[in-house]
Length: 233
Ligand SMILES: [Zn+2]
Image (cartoon, rainbow, N blue to C red; front, top):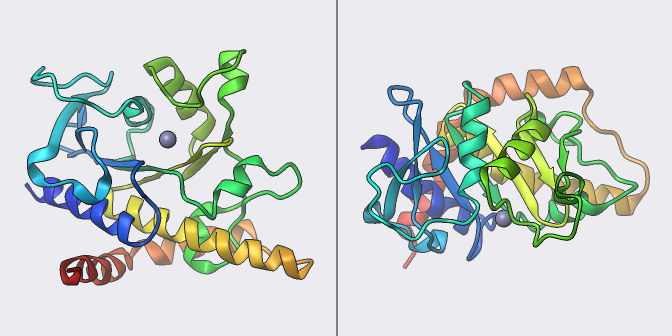
């Protein structure tokens, strides 16, 4: 039940912190049942409650077959969980400050602050057109597209999706949320630095060490954000 509560809270936090709006989704899986994951039925994140959660298998099918209206892009989650046995939480968002970095041909998204060390020198970019070979609506609509995305992600913590958004992974739901929030913040800082001229990003070594340190601080931020959602009228 704790996982279910975290998935609900994750939806509310990500809406509150400006990472999700009416779209995007978050999932988590329990190490005891790695062949399935928990996610909301198709719903705006701020409206998700415990009753809205469904359990899907790693092909994106609802376990109990009860016919819930599911997110079209649930295959993002299914395919990444298939590929990454170390991942137990995933956020897919259209993180507004990150979006320009999904389309820029001159600027690469990179960790520029220590809170976003997990970004490193972000090299993972998924371009649906490369895999589909023709015009598509940019959505990850089936398992094959999800697997292409997972391949683009590789061993990294996030993958940019051209003209679409970002998918962030973590060792659990809370770390995935932490990273999704700080990816958005990092994008704002990096964009401001770009307008000022030249700037210095973290080295790969700095980024890795910062990520290691931050991994022990996730609950501190989570508890703050969770407290804020409870105060919301
Ligand atoms: Zn999307």
